[in-house]
Structure formats: structure tokens, C-alpha cells
Length: 426
Image (cartoon, rainbow, N blue to C red; front, top):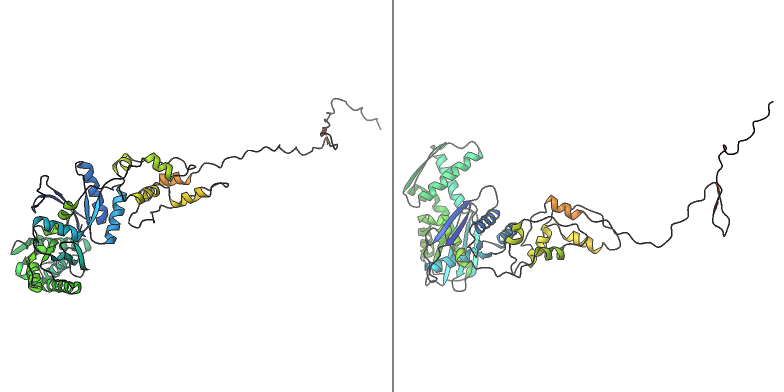
């Protein structure tokens, strides 16, 4: 996964186990547009697994622990668990060793120059241990594209774009010109602002200082690692530029290996490392609900079929089970209310959507409004049985109370029963 695209690779069936050809993969590139690269990768894996049921293993390469946490969170939101994460350097070594490109090299520099930055790592090829590694964003494919853009505008052939959208289009043309120069001596691309015209010689003089700076960084990384190296593996989209290999070999004094399609090396190596994840005994949805939900909560909303049957709980998914409970609305605040519900009625509350904090590597999607409503509705408290007699009614105006006797109520006689005589005349 890069800053600009997600690359997917699938080995052809029937490949020999001892040697892998560089072209023995089905490759697909998905541009990143309008969403994070982790979310795009998780969605792409989910769609691929649903449309291609014969895939039994998935591996995803990551650059750092922060990157790995974001990937786990995105995969959890897609209800995917049958996968493993592998470091990018390990995936690159797997591919290079499988193709025989680094045969006989015991200590190697992996030089990865992509669109967002440069990573240089010193690796022991036998143990695959990273001895030392550094990354910088000062040198990147995007930076080389900006050098071309500014040179084209300064030449007077290209008008400066009036807005950010036009600037992005011009950057895309400069990137395309850079990629075409990997196999051509000159390139000309028309645009609304003018003609992007670039020759190989001009391009190399334009980026020479940046490439030499990257070689100096690689040499410094070797010095800090205190390990001798016997070769350089150059990968990433910018490794296609012929100047990169020439400068690295001059500065490092060791052979520089540039595999075919260097921008897909990590994806192809991850595909070779993919192994099925051994599942835990599957926990049924009913058992999970009975364990995680208090008895006095109303029934949770029905979940989609894919959420129940599509995701397999793995060895590392004990925390995922708790995370699924949080996603359904059974958060820690609900369980806490249940522990205090005996003897006092609970006041229904509506809590904001939450994500799990028990495992920083796993996050769960916010609860839907229906799920939040299910959490906030509770059954009324049970009525307590009573054995006491109701208190006697308060005595009325016609009631005579005699101690020791029940109250005596004197009836009121209407005047029509015994009419009074008329008054005497005056």
C-alpha cells in the first residue's frame, strides 16, 4: 500500500515452490481517491474474498506499528479476520529470495523510494532481522514531480494553473512524464495549460541533487547500523528511474538489484507469505449475545448475515469478540449499569458511539442509531410483593369512632322522607 494506490497480487496456481518467476502474478492497482489507504485496502480485500471464494489466505504488508493498527481497525470494520500482517521489508525479502535476485547476499540494504517518501533499511537476509532503518519524506516521488512541474512552468511553455484542481492535473502529467522516461529518451504530453516536454538528460540533471541526497542517506544508515552490506535492493515506483541505480552503485560500491516492476515487489512478496489463519472454535451469535448482554436489555437488532457467518474468529480474536460487543452497543457503560441494577431501577440513557480501548490495535465501527436505541431502552423494575393490609380510609363527617369497635357510619336522610311542617303565619 502506498500513499497513492493499493496494489494487490495473487500468485498463479501451479508455481514451483523453489523458484518464482517475477511475472507469475495477477496484479491490480487501485488508486486512492477520497478515502484513507487503510479503508480502501480493507474494502478491496473484502470484495475480493466475496467474489473469489477459492482464496484461502490473505497477507497485508505494513510499514510501521501505527500503520498496522490502522489496518487492523479497518479490517475489523469490514468484519474480516482471516488475514495476517507482514512487515514491508520482510515481504520484499521474500520476493527477492524467491526469484533468486539476492542469492548469495547475506546483508542487504533495502532502498524503497515511493511517492510519499524514502525508507532505507539494513537487513540480515538469513534471519530477516532489520538491523537499522530510517525514513524521510523530504525525498519522494511527489517531490520529483514538483521539480518537473516548476521546471515546466519556468520554461514558459506551461501556464500556472489557476486553482488547486488544475495544479493536481498538471502534477499527474508530470508524474506520467517521469514514468515514461524510464523507457524513453524524451516525452511530450499535451495539457490545457500547454505542452509538457521533457528529455531524459534534462530530467536527470533536474533530479540529480535529490537522488544523490538519498544515496548519502543510505550510506549514513549503513554506517549507523555498523554492519557491512553486500548489495542494495531498490524498490518502489521511483526505482524505475535509471539514474537511481547508477547513483546508488557509485555511492555504495556494491551491486544494485532493481526487480521487474519494483513498485509491486512488496505486494508480490506479501502474497507469497500468505498463510491461512487457524481459527478458534466459532462462537455462535446467540452464545456471544448471552455472554455480553445483560438480561434486562431488550433484544439487540438483527445483524446482517455477513457479519455473523462471513467473519471467522481467529486465535488473536479474543479481543475482537469484546470489540464486536461494543460495536453492537454492549459497551462498558452498559455492563457497569448491570452490575449496579440490583435493588435500584436503572435510568435509561443514550450514550455516544464508542470504540474499544482495551486493545489499541483494534477499533470497532460506531453503533448505529438502532443499536444505540436498543442499548438505551430497559425494562421497568420489578414490582415488590407486599403483605401489609391497606391503611383504613380517613373518617368522614358522618362517621362515629368508638375505641375497640369498628367505625359507625350514620346515614344521611334526605329531607323529602320526613317533611317538616310549614312555619306559622306572622
